[in-house]
Image 1 (tube, rainbow, N blue to C red):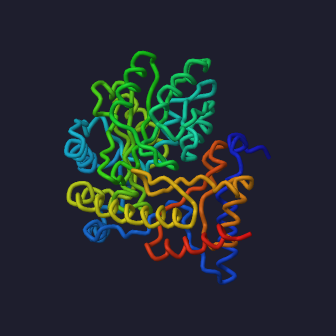
Image 2 (cartoon, rainbow, N blue to C red):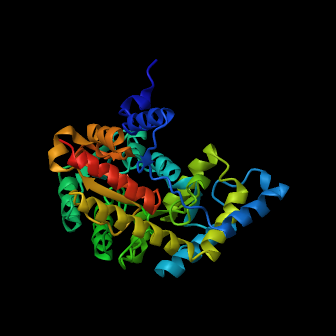
Image 3 (cartoon, rainbow, N blue to C red):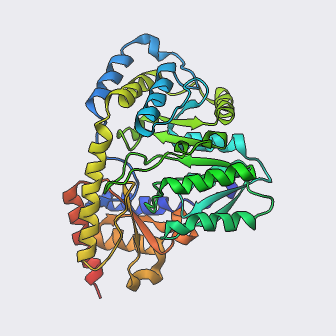
Length: 391
């Protein structure tokens, strides 16, 4: 039977490495898993305690609201004011999502249909492309090179030669998988262009709090008028180590937020209410949690990058995200990313994500996720050293 929309999806290359990893572990091998970006840090105790308390109240076991409870939307509004000096109306400019990934997928249904086009950087987090594909739209990739100062120019070049004109531009900075970061000037240019050309901007801001070396990532809403042409996704998955809790937010343009809220009213009853209540504590009372998590990822970044440098594999240190985007060493580049990832798994006992899973332009890279402790990362480097020194 034809599976319609699913026929447009390529094989999920990450599953190949995951299956090899599982097989190796069944054989009793110790695999250091730096593949999936699955945080290993525990959720802060205050958030867990509030969940425990809320779940004991039977009134919280009923259906919630797909838009999110009022106090949680207010907490997100307060967070924006405190963190970015930006006003967000909790009544009309925020909808709670079941993680950013769900929100992105359903927002594409609101904004795109067959015949539309969306511009997406490549390489990219898979849902950034596939949310548009699953809506029936065409995705036009824009190369994200190592020098992000050229990215806006590349974006404009691709936009001008695309027909019909793209309806949506989706960006995400700090960027997964590359770790690229931008300054406020990038969003000023992007918002101005969007306003002049009737194009809508989606900014996935999942790594707003996981940044290093003094970098302060801008919200797109720090640009005056951005809410006329944009929404932004915030997630608690990485900032508060709440990945499995599935809690995120879409904020910004009230018409688009209302559209997403309307669609979700047909599809879900919102996040389990005790999780929403606990998320209020995360936003209001746990300002120390994001910098604490960022400090851990910062240290792990340095352990990995400096360790790889010592064994002859130079990689750049990203200023944001919990990932290291590493060009495959020259002598192994002919293997490309999937075969090189298999080699690392087999001979170094280290699992990484093949870059081709983030788009064809990523095939000369692999992505490390900083989800093991310092000593395990050092162990991974020792395993990689053996591969680097092999004949």
